[in-house]
Amino acid sequence: MPTSNTFLSGLAAFAALTQLAYATTCQHQPINSIQYCQETTAITYSNIADSGTYQDVSGYDMDSCTCSFTPKDFSGGLAPLNEELSLHLRGPIILKKFAAYTPNTKAKRHEDHVRRHAHGHLRKRKDNVLTVTSTTTITITVPASDATPAPGSGGQGSNGGYGGTGPGASGVNVDTISGGDEVHADIASSKTSAAAPTASSASAVTGDWNRISFFDAEAGKADGLVFLNHMGGQGSGTFDNCFGNSISYANGTANGGSAKPTILEDILIPSNNEFIIMTDRPCEGNDCGVHRPGIPAYHGFGGDNKVFLFEFQMPEDKNCPEFNRNIPAIWALNAKIPRNVQYGKCSCWDTGCGEIDLFETLVDADDFLKTHYHSKQGAVGKYGGGGAPDFFARPYSKPIQAAVVFSGTSVTIKVLDEDTSFAEALSSDFVKGCEKSVSVFAVPS
Image 1 (tube, rainbow, N blue to C red):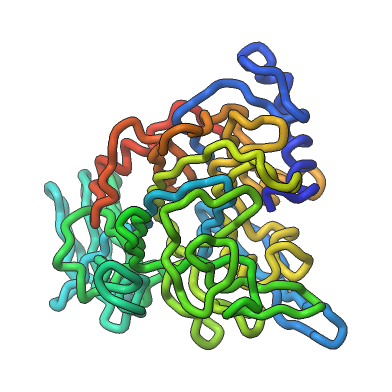
Image 2: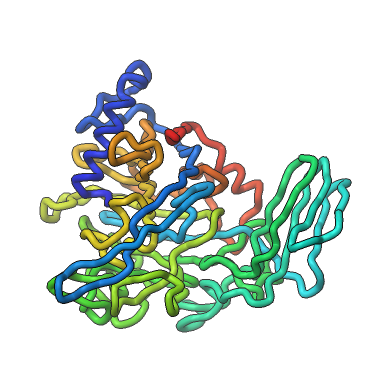
């Protein structure tokens, strides 16, 4: 986690390996052995494509205060960040707006349809595979009649509060493929991911990326998401002497628990106060895996490709106890971690199930926001991943807007240079623009 000793040790170890390489270009001296080279507006982590095994929590023994683990394999582009993610924010921070998007997957009531943007040739469907020969761009759209409802498709309340009818569509993801001789599109699966949009509202939205979750603090509106924190036992969640406080619904100021989902207020969340954003889709049966008993368990943001938009401010705050004073942060974890024990041994974090720090101020470096990818990929010893040497400027006095794009084998974190509306849909051009990066860090293989 961002404030743990292992986190700081991992950052320092990586910084030691890269310090010499950037010695001639860094504008700042290292702080606590961590590089702060150039201020930037965009950082891309490329080559995220690992395969391996982490230890997944498989059970709890309250008599011995222990938990058991089972090996869990992972692989593919962005792995293990291609699993469901939870988003975590720590004060001092003012979150003004947030939105999450997934690729538009327009469901069709008729047979499988292939829309060709230019000349191409469609061959016969066989064994759930479409074979397409084309020298240009094609888009394959496949329906799914038994898609699982997604965040924003229902829930609590109506306009101005939780719930609503968030935009989206059911079906498998739309893949746009450029060029090539022969393309095979696997259409056997008809299940959507946890964060996939819903079919009922797809027709109302036009765009390449559909909004599945939305929060506007000033308007007091939240759709397709829940706010949680670590105040188990205060209205929701649980507390015990084995594992301490579980997650709970957060109250409106994020400094206590709540008995039900509550919208975050438009206020400054002070130092050392942390809250979590998940989708509003409850875990059912074993579809989230094993989690700590008695918690408000929700799915994270799933899918290989996803976009998050943030509008936030990180004012200075030195009027609190020493621990975590004035070090705001936004980061993403494998959603299994907070559903179990985020700050303790009963989670998969230590064995590499995934974390990426998006905007984080570290000790003695108040003015800077760093990024870091925690994984076992390219490990030298126990820890791999790595951190880009460049940094973002901390937004002290006014909010900034930022986009985080998970796509293919890369994660791009970009401060936006113009006002963005957090609309119900995003164009591919907008997302591609967000992926253009000033600073690229290739994660070692």
